[in-house]
Amino acid sequence: MSTNPSAAPAPGELFASINPATGEVLAQLRVAGAGEVDAAVAAARAAQPAWGELTGAARAKFLQRAAQLLRSRNDELAELETRDTGKPIQETRVVDVASGAECLEYFAGIAHGLGGEHLNLGGSAFGYTRREPLGVVAGIGAWNYPLQIACWKAAPALACGNAMIFKPAELTPLTALKLQEVFAEAGLPSGLFQVVQGFADTGRLLTRHPQIRKISLTGEVGTGKAVMADAAASLKNVTLELGGKSPLIIFGDANLDDAVSGALLANFYSAGQVCSNATRVFVHRSVRTAFLERLLARVAPLRIGDPLDPATQVGALISELHMNKVLAYIARGRAEGARLLIGGERVRSGALARGFFIAPAVFDQCTDSMAIVREEIFGPVMSVLDFDTEEEVIRRANATEFGLAAGVFTNDLTRAHRVIAKIEAGTCWINHYNVTPIELPFGGFKMSGLGRENGRAAIEHYSQLKSVYVGMSGVDAPY
Image (tube, rainbow, N blue to C red; front, side, top):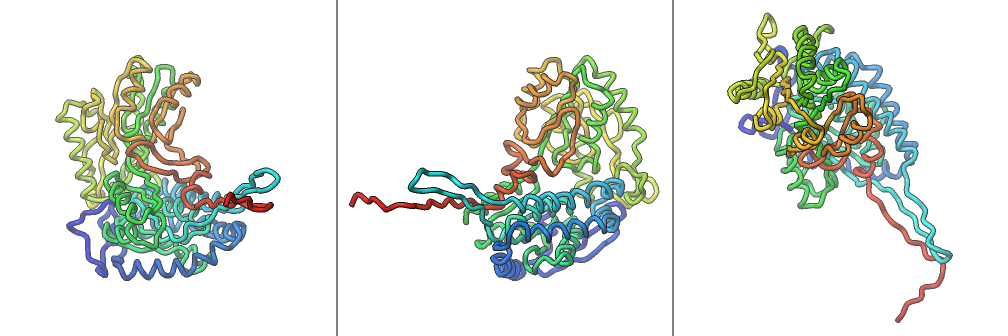
């Protein structure tokens, strides 16, 4: 939910969605105010009870049809996502739309088996639990994976019998509207998935609305704190998927080609604009030189270009404001003594001059106290650090307020499991990085958030449990 408050238009006014690769205005959208949010909540409240009373199998049919429609429109939606985000089409065609469809399919399957449990309480009683919807819930998306995030929030919400109101990030508002269209075409009753557009003020209307029972946010730590404070007034449930400054640990016995591949995925996919990115790359001193040689040999030929060109590997950053923030971090890294080995400059060649492109940057000679090592940059900036012992690297990896993700590369699987067990992070990889199958819960520790997206764990955050005691004998009251 990144925004520039001083530039935010008022409710009812228009704002532009801009292609960050070209500066082209893609669409004009209207900011939702209190009236629009209240109307959306009223429509959701009217539609939700009947939806919640359906069997899980009945709800699953709508999700399955929506998934099929997403797949059939993959190329069209991928192109729109690329224009709206600046991400390469080679990414959006294989990840963004497909992962959203996979999420809908997964929670359609989960919906079939939703239920409670029976408990034997002896001959005179038994008990059971019911898993029931929360009611009207809201999702607030981030700008880096707009369609995927909308699906990650809508699918479990709808599977559990809720209605969802979704506010996409103001920088990438378009594919959520397409998802709304897809749900309507799939036959989802009106009011169950609605999109409201706007900036932070529109988000606050959702977080403070007394008839919304849950907020799920993907965004920055500061935004997460504000959402949690707002939710406290009406004791809303919250799921917060926030930022990270994750470690990638490469031991001396690792397969270095795989480790380099992992480091590239952990830093330069989507131009580094991924919350789980491992931008602190700890490399054992014994393989540091070999690792850097292989890394630089693969970074140098990365193709920066038009995101709609299938050959492009690195696209644009989301906005000029964000690009300047990333460039300022690169300058600060050099000023603090880190050595810039490659990249780090704005790319202005040809038509790229109209967009917000930065060549992927690799720093070494970094120390743990540097800003580029401590603070989340959210751009294509990798910091390489040396280490000597397992105990040392675990301590340094955990020395952060964040705890979203972590990765370990080693051929010693005993060490891999031992180290991962000691790392303070909610989403971890061994000998891979940044793959997020829908079956596995996703979320962080510490300041990286609360709750989980995906997997069966998400059901806990979109439903409430009712306990029922059933007496089967007389009541023996001591009165």
